[in-house]
Amino acid sequence: MKFTFCPACGDILIDKEIGDEGLIPFCNSCSRPYFDYFGICIITAVINEYNEVALLRQAYVSTTNWVLVAGYINQGESLEDAVIREVVEETGQKADKVTYVSSYYYKKRELLMVGFRCDVKKREFNKSMEVDKIKWHKLSEAVKLLREGSIAQQLLQAIVK
Image 1: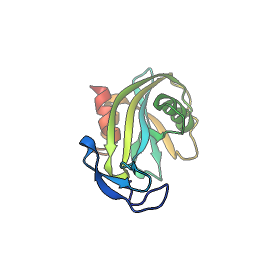
Image 2: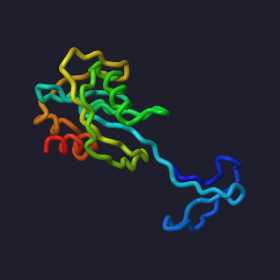
Image 3: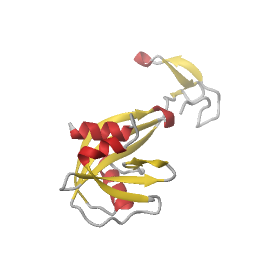
Image 4: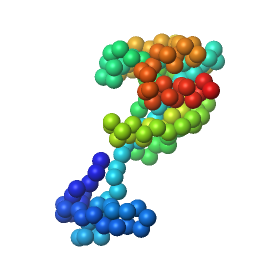
């Protein structure tokens, strides 16, 4: 998100040279810069001891493509805590180990998606209302089931390597 007006006083922002950052929207009244803002989400591959990954179908995301568990970070929550919470909420699985893999910028939605691997012991799914379908897939085959070039596919490819 790019700021045009100061969120504190409502004045229109001007472009001001700020150190090595270049021209940044700046409020003369408040003497404060406003850097572009973007959201932060986690995306995680939930993998069990049989080398299977949980793939989800969520109609509000796609009716044709499988996706990985993903979600926004709550205020005061660490990235790892968000992974653990989202995995429980969307799949009912309990995280044994959470490992950072990589981060990805999703320009279309102005999101930084932080990618993780979440290891679990396989148990029955307890899906949330926002999940239409969930299924275990062999890790080696799951990459082909995700949308070509998607962040989910990139994350899984990084894990398979």
